[in-house]
Length: 194
Image (cartoon, rainbow, N blue to C red; front, side, top):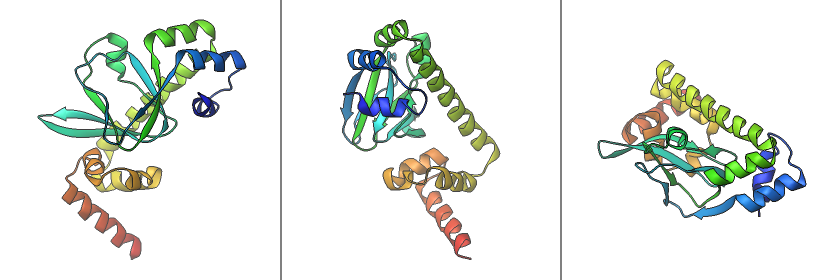
């Protein structure tokens, strides 16, 4: 059941048979259809997710409009961190952009895993560090780069998103309108051709 999860965790550390058995026992797999909401703002988060298939959009409701903040793909942990840690209503929502498979770690299951093996502490630390680095990179990108530079960076670092994610979500993520994104794309490709 957890083969995909174990395969991704192997990028961080290897698991012995009893640790794999613990994952089998305490972690559940869930499937979400394209456009299905996984978690909504206002709820208190009691789960951490790990993506083994698909793409998930993190977004905020700003004055009645969705604002995309990030995309999670295979091999990434997802957590409404503030809500999960401090038991407060979450400000963010998560949506499956395509058919998505997640492994769900509930708070009680995480506690049990941590009792079983310190290897799970290492995995938890890596997940938190990765999320922190992602957040810092996004902030730095918005503070130091133009929308066009952010577009080029996204194209270079995660170009497959352009095949997987609707353009309006890419535009929202870059902080521009879909029309502005079209103009940016045209400029970038004109520069490449010249």
